[in-house]
Amino acid sequence: MNSAHRQNDRWRWLTAGAVAVCLLAFTLLIGLLAWQGVRAFWPQPVDHYQLRSPDAEPVALLGETLQAEQQQTGWRYLVKTGNRDFAAPDFRVIYSRTPAKPQQPKDVLVLQRRSGGNAYGWLVALQEEGETLSAQNPYALLQQRLQQVQTELHQAANIRRIDMARLNARLEKLQQQADEQQRNNRFGLQEQSEFDANRAALQRRFNALTRQLTWLQQASQRDTLILRDTQGAEHTIPLTQIVAAWYPNSMSLPQKAQHFLRQVWQFVSDSPAAGGSESGAFPAIFGTVLMVLLMSIIVMPLGVIVAVWLHEYAGRNALTRLVRIAVVNLAGVPSIVYGVFGLGFFVWLIGGTLDQLFFARALPNPTFGTPGLLWAALTLALLTLPVVIVATEEGLSRIPDALRQGSLALGATQAETLWRVVLPLAVPAMLTGLILAVARAAGETAPLMLVGVVKMVPELPLDAVFPYLHLDRKFMHLGFQIYDLAFQSPNIDADRPLVYATALLLVIIILSLNLLAMILRHRLRERYRLMTH
Image (tube, rainbow, N blue to C red):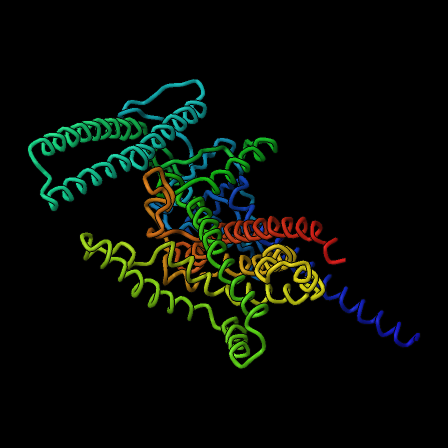
């Protein structure tokens, strides 16, 4: 008895140790991602290096010191100098025989730009249409003009994305109605007059929006900033290219915290296609969440139906054994194989057939015969289908047969027993399968590269134009954005903190989706717990 007890204690400690190691590894992973990702948003001090050597020219650098280490021959400094467009590259390595003592001028300005990375220097002047603006507080004037320019850019983006898109949709619908009437020989003089009047009204509205858009673009481009770099050269930067500006060396801790929160919000809410920063992640966040939701809607009914058929109706025979073997084997197929299958079957076969049947007038430009959101969701649903089937069937097997027999004895049919007794008790197991499916699907990247994900999209799959949800459009994904920043970026060193920040964002989204499913599973499990006793 004591020997068996000691044996159980060993297994308990072994299990507890394994769980502790897993939790520690996960905590370290989150900590690493958070620590490295914070660097992309926390305002770092800017150092001004002025190094002189008797056998070399003086070195003057301005930037953020990322690394300072002592070597055998002296000191090595890695400095992020920015100014990529006129002083490439972004990073410089400098060596010094003695420890460098850089200064941190209070008036050094950092500019976060929409392209080209950060710019470092000193504010010389603000200009409006070539005329220098005078102000007692140039920095306050700069912030005011930046806010005004961003408002104008936002209004212009809304006109292009919403108002003009709606007008284009109405023009296309009007033209389609006219073409339909002509094919049916019902396009007479009255219909022609109505068509011309409606088209002219829409064209007048479109012209008015075009004039408003042109005015906003001209108004946003009238202001420029003169920045002097550490070499004394002055550079003209339009305010339309600037996202934010700050003096990092003169900021207090509360100001840095406020700046950090603004940068984080800008990262998760900006869109490069809408005029935001080049690192905006909102389209990727939106595409990831929407794809996972669509995949869940598709895979859950299919997985539950297959599991119910296998456990409740099929019985034990050679066919069911073959199906179970196939399901287990499908769970081990590499994800890229699913991507190739989705490209060939969903995109080329089904999508091409739909184009031939319903969108023949748009050919040779494909509508559904090209990678898009729908085919990506279907491909990932096929990839995660074995997980849902196995989890649901295990849940069905844990339901006591006495409940089924009692329901049948009371006069219920097998279908009523399944619908009112068995399936409610199996809902927690179904949600367990959903949690596992979401965890796998949200992190997949390889198959999505073949069936719909792209680096940049001009518009989201969801907008204000009917039918509002456009399943044929391509989309962005956080996993692909991590891959692109880490391996395809022309400036990998500058984008490395964004890789960690994007990875942390993806982990948080997966955890949030799983947490919602776990909360729902817990509530349903508590609700139906008494039915099994």
